[in-house]
Length: 258
Image (cartoon, rainbow, N blue to C red; front, side, top):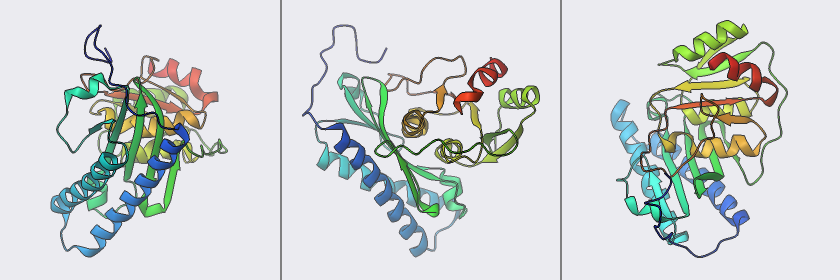
């Protein structure tokens, strides 16, 4: 269930214009990405220590910004203790201050910053920054559907490609392409680098909320492996599977992963 008990009273915050929320999400993702780039360039830390620094820098900026700018809203973050009072809120910001900590610490470009606003469990607003690429994709200005790349490509985790994706690729005659963070992979589909992203196992709400919001706004199919919608602000934040694909591939891909 999305909220704390069938008769629970939802906390009703100040009413904000959704277009302002969308612009805020985009600005925060961009600024957090810039801070992370600066922190990485200025430090001599490496490996896990660099990743921990990035997590802390992103979390401090985003949490303080949302506290100041949207004080009535709840926040769910990978880098902060979960506060169960979020279950009584209609508006919940779900953030991943640094999605792809390993990629960030290795100097790769396939990491991201996620900022999403979920309203009554629906990923309504989202922004995903790809700082090393100088790119922010958001629901404020949904990107147009790109041309499909040559050859059917499915993005998967570069370290743990799921078996379901391998089976689907074999059935469809597709190439599996490994990439880093979940945000980078979903945006890879949105940007036309691949036809689909298939994931199973090991993700939480903050890994997908912002990328899913952007993909939906851009017209892509998004669902869980069983075809059900992605729903957020649940008591259990574990959300382990995800399919994002071009709309013309939906029926074939969902049949292949089913």
